[in-house]
Length: 281
Picture (tube, rainbow, N blue to C red):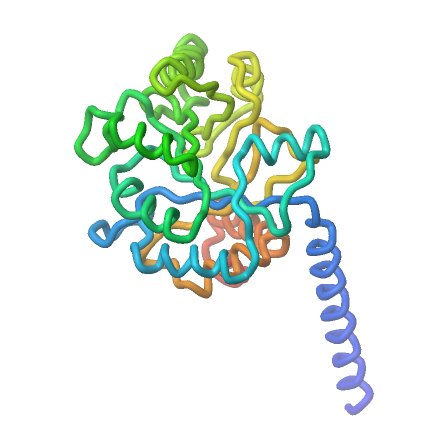
């Protein structure tokens, strides 16, 4: 009986050591990776999966500053990936999808307060059109501040891999042209609506003149990735996103991102019960 207990304990020790070694390896190999945090709405009104409360967002920004993170732009990241341009210690990119007015009212003052840069992916046809989205005057003010970079999130936010090629071309090219005309700056980056993509979309995005594109797949952006399917770290969901979860998703993305992908895969294949046992924050 004692022999069997010893064997079981030894087996568990080996498993634990193997898991520890894998985790250590993944953290070590993430040295050149950049966390690209993905936000949507920042307000205290909407209790939905796209929202982070304002006080929680400020707590997260303060954490970044207090822990030595330095915000960079997508262009600075790609310069480092492609040309070896040096990056600051602990680089991080703050991205916001869609162009909600609360990005101007709530997130922007907090970024100014802590001296942080941000990138907002705009649905160009929605700006100045719907009350829940920013006006062009607000966009201009944020751009002139020098801390907010604006890029494309298409004209009207369709899932690009689910529409005909001519409509994809229209959404990619005309959103880029519209924003370049309106903002008087190059538009080199796009975030795919809903994060969905396929091989044809990757090709068309490159042909449309974008330098890189972002998904909503949980993971770190790395030089080894296809630049037209860059991972991000989703930080939204006011009903589920506690501050500790933010820390875990940011600091241990190399470990938790594969687990998150496994959990989603199990749910997609109908194994909901098994997915609950996967430790993915």
